[in-house]
Image 1: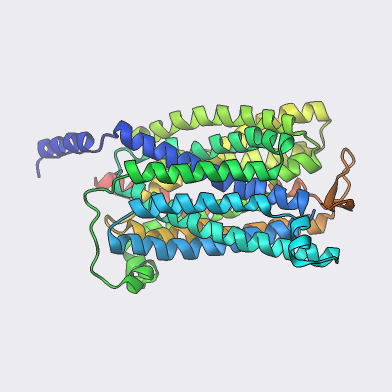
Image 2: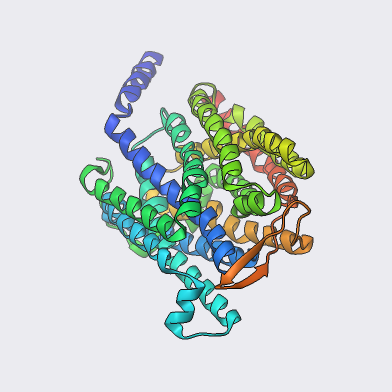
Length: 466
């Protein structure tokens, strides 16, 4: 093929892969509200358990670990099934509807309701039973959420994008967790303060279900997506085959970098709002203001940097954003004992640095994963992505975080004493997360250097060949 033909094909490809307003609407609606749902699960479900059921990080650890396992299993089976049926649309739409309905059910979970329904009087049994109910319900909710979002929606995005626009799409999609965090930590925080957790879960559940109804009318599958005739069970284990791993070695190395990054995030992220509220002593207004400024600033920078990555290359930015993330985590550890007024300002500044590195790593790694996912195999490989991005990190990360919290045994920080009401009139002093979480997360994140060296070296070779 001549050089001119290559140029013509490049121009044609760019024209063919332009993103329509309809597609942007779908990306934002399902991306944003899916991320809001995950943010509530990852942060406010944890705070809900901590505040109203049992003031211990052990319950949070159990919930996060179980959720990660279920999310991966659901994505493996649902992703392969969406390939088999040649249909992402129904999985997305009906999955969101059911997902929202289950979220709304959390409005009825409490120690008092458990005691009344089951006729229990022993506080320890009441708390254990309520935690068990939360964990089971969280797993059911995660099953449908992962089917709709992690398996079907992520595969749909891969089906409808290519290398010419994924950096831009990922730049926008990857700001959505930040925006969702702002909405959840800020607006939803005030809902909890003024109305309580039942209203939070009811409102969120209704919104997610409405998104599913929107999908029935507006989501269309990519023309290239076709029903597969092969064995469904073989497709489930497609990504585990040694031959597939060998053929897609770069994909699995990128996933290993994503795994290390996600482990580091899960060491501190499930406990983040609890840490700010219970260790640092921030009020809802204070941590909402800090997170709001950080998130808005990082979101603007991320959109710009996402577009820039399409032009200058993703590999040139990986080391920089990884360093930014690690430095941000380390400094968050150092500033934890500052006076309150200085702490608010420095947490905002350093939080911006950390969150910018955190989200840009997500942007670049997700874009690289999509770039190296074989065409027509996106559904089968979503489960593999979940193993590296969710299962291993959500089992390993929170357990490391919980071990740190137990070793520190901080129950009454100098600036703040917290007691949680387990049931009417019964209180218990709480153990709280500590700043050591950030130090350990930074140390783990440094290990990304190993797969990053391989990635950059091999992608540079590919660019020279091209």
